[in-house]
Length: 328
Ligand code: BTN
Image (cartoon, rainbow, N blue to C red; front, side, top):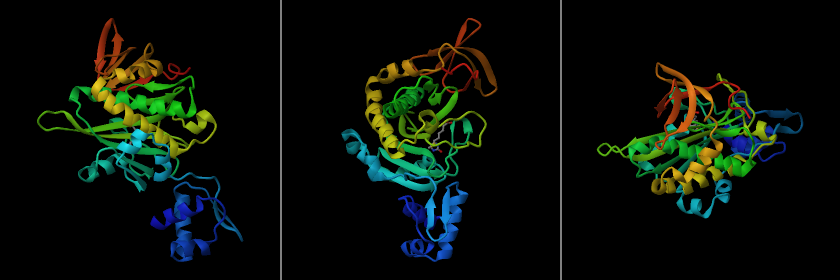
């Protein structure tokens, strides 16, 4: 795969490259270049071969790049982010960071061109084809007590949503689906997986890995459910590097504020973009299934469901909405 990435880096600059020139630049045989091109095609990249001209990418690709990401950082992020690590392909950026925790400085950002075992909430998978979406994880330390766990997830969702709105502007129908999915007109745009390690004695949250999967390009997702991408919403391709930086900027500024100020730091954002309140939803928690009306969230970030004049709160659950219910 190494040669394939070398080739990808070269041809992503645009133009045509002969097998011979690629072989020379990568210091391998032409047969290895041919194999690398085949591999890139297997991973879904459209590599064109034109007789007499060579190889070229059918569509321009912006590869992830640490310098480009940091060029969009705020002063705060430039100061606080300890490292930007770009991976070509990994199992899961969350798993990669969790394995690396003993060697990481706080505020370590990891972004991958693709994941082969991307994970979602509730044991689900997350599809991350090469170069086609954002798969990022951010490692940070925390001083939060464990009862802040649910709210932390919500705060992260608000950070990502704000970054998206900063970049593409307001779109009616774009908002937050508890706990921290970002949806647009009934389809999922972004999923977030917050994983924490707790102190063995105090049970306080010690370390946090925030994983964010965001569909930037129009792709066919091989899972059940409705998904959408920023390309489909806006009609254009956004810069993945810029969006990664903008999300990081919001995390770097909001997470410390959350530690001091609590959920009020994002309450306004939550209330403005909350897609569920007032709608009929089905909540699944293990074998417990309840249909009721979402009446908001409580001060601990749990979703509140009203059923038969009783209100039940859930900290962790799978919430499904009637397909038409959260469209604009
Ligand atoms: C969900 O909606 O269930 C959460 C999806 C989270 C996906 C992201 S992609 C980056 C990070 N690495 C993973 O394996 N998962 C998260």
